[in-house]
Length: 125
Image: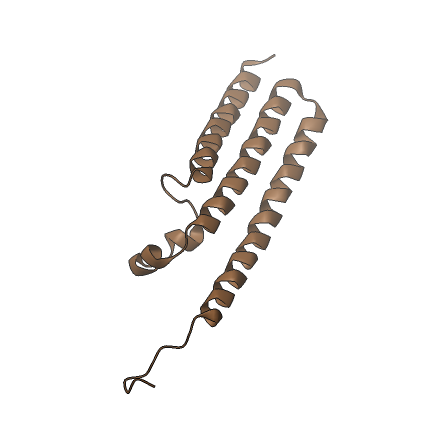
């Protein structure tokens, strides 16, 4: 095994560890929420938003990414094509899940907003 293989694998395994830590903290709903909807929201929106679905989405995506990088790291060590294909499939799953869950979260948010009672106008009507 060459030095390049070991270095590539070490880098990939380090990325696995980082993704796993982010996923675990997101499953526990702790720490920084690495989600575009949260990061691009205003301070007021961040305070009012239900963060649970965003934490769950982040946790699942980073779990899939950790598995992807693990598979790619094993491939870098063994050159067994199965691990490369498996990593690519996991990456595809992560992308599909991220898109579909974003749509579902937005639909749920819209339906929650429409279920709220309309606010009274200035005259109390």
